[in-house]
Image (cartoon, rainbow, N blue to C red):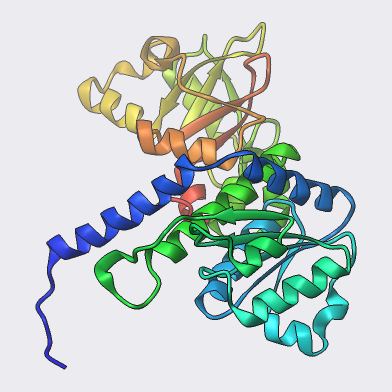
Length: 335
């Protein structure tokens, strides 16, 4: 085998061909897709399971589709078609739905499994390459979906465009089903308590270490800078990197004064500690409502580079302050 140099132009061509394959699938969606989503959501509503089956690379794509369904609130498991016909048919119940994958629509093990399950009264959604004449799997299926891919990207014998298009169609089914059952970020977070995805969907107050009434003093904005610093120093334990200034009467947030602000103030005018803190604070700082998710804080940090973020209640009163170091410690952002 002669080694060929890497051709970036060829690589771009492969990606463009796969992109066109996905676009072609989008262009041919019709009422069959709607019916397939209805079967999936009805299955989930009846406590059924969506079982996904394919052989070889179709099986690998099916496993990913199944994982996506499960993560979005639709119980799902991948099933190997050969193992199913050799003892695993007991996994299938009448309230379950099957998604059967085969580009040719003639994969013997998948076709046989689909035929048995249809005889038992299960609904079968097939995803095949399609063609002028319906394949065996298409004829068996309750809802036959096709990707219409007859050419693999890169002119290689291994499936490329077809598997990409199949995966994209499976993702569309899963996401459309999740939307239909009103699956929420909170639901997703319950299923993903670990990792960065789960972390981003946690309520922001779960990770706030500086909380009003505990270790975050709220400073009257009528005090001088020196008096405000004296009040802040009364805080036990680690001191936050900023002071939150509030209106004494309403308790609402009026400003923020950071350690960086203090350094610049003193370096510019050593005698400025007697000034009213209201004259040197940052008024109306960007805040997060206490109902926010961690991902909202990450967005604010990335877009505005704000290291200390006040968290306020519905009346604009501070309830906590998020320090960017909290996000860094959770490995949700980089320093």
